Image (cartoon, one colour):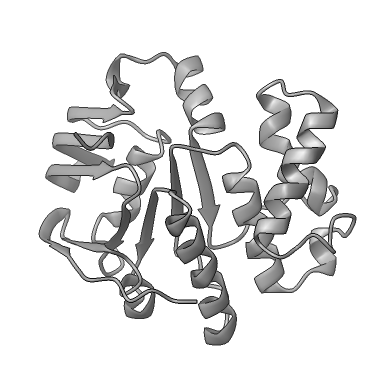
Length: 234
């Protein structure tokens, strides 16, 4: 039986603007199994980013249930949620979110530091992770010395260094030109082929086409959930 990394049942989320309640997600049901490449697609304001924040344990739903790796998230403490975010989920953002004062190696080591891993093992794991994304020659450089594509490679290396249960990416090519974006997508292809589980949020059709499953969100609801035949990219 396929292992479910994510299982969401009848999930609702609203925000309040003044005295007005604004629904963001309505009755969401979604399961993601291990080694699946899922894209959540939708226009701005569709609710896809809210869904990503809940999946990433950055926000909580108002109603419904969310299981991460078999654990009911609603019953977890803030400390337990922090441990999941730090070790079980690899985050990749459009804006890279690298720490300017740290070298690329130290940026990638950071999640391992918070997990209490020794300095020597942190260095070894971070170097291996950077080699996977083709940045082994940039270890001592600062983020300011890297191109946009290299910054995103470093962010991916940081996301996968803990061997997370799932990699979550929010518009990972949004700040990149098309050629550099294609290079980044090839890295996601390799992560998937190596057994990784990927969930990408995007409005970009080129990005969406890379997934093996496209979930379309509109006005806070899942309006389609389609398995597609992946065309492998080298």
